[in-house]
Image (cartoon, rainbow, N blue to C red; front, top):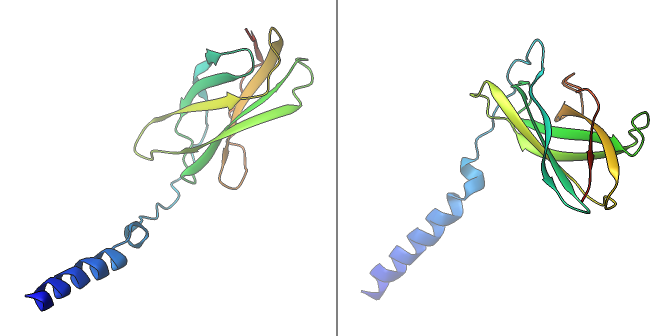
Length: 139
């Protein structure tokens, strides 16, 4: 009986050892990049707090590498958007569109910020989807 229990325990242990999640991880190849990426829903402020904001926008699916980044270029001068915030996203290759959300931290309260949005592939190459300059004022 002990031998059967020990054999069963070893089978479970070895099975879980060899069947780790990384053993079954799926590598998704890049898809064809979209001919033209455009913002389909304008950037808007999803959350506005004294020291942070979340900016959300939607574009057609840019394609290319599954790993992407939403990028916000911002600053207090509309002609000098010298600060950058970015958030990682994994594209769903089966969807026609992509929703980007970027958290912008370390903002000053009651301050007006100007921003544009963009997206980058895994290699840091822009998808060419830069928006017009918009603004918001922190609480």
